[in-house]
Length: 58
Image 1 (cartoon, rainbow, N blue to C red):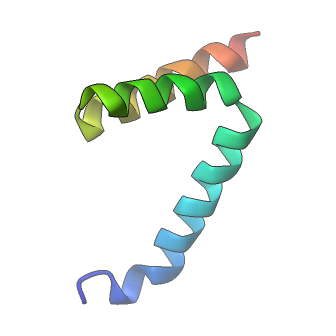
Image 2 (image 1 turned 90 degrees about the vertical axis):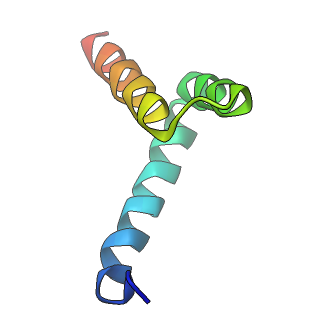
């Protein structure tokens, strides 16, 4: 398995993203819409990063 040595990092990343999306439900909704449209992973990542940046500015 390619990720065998990285399982702890992958697990941490998944849990971190889950917590962020719970805390920022508007970002979760926007991400769900982007994924439903078939946006690329890169586009979805950029969306989340930009929305988190905006949330930090508030």
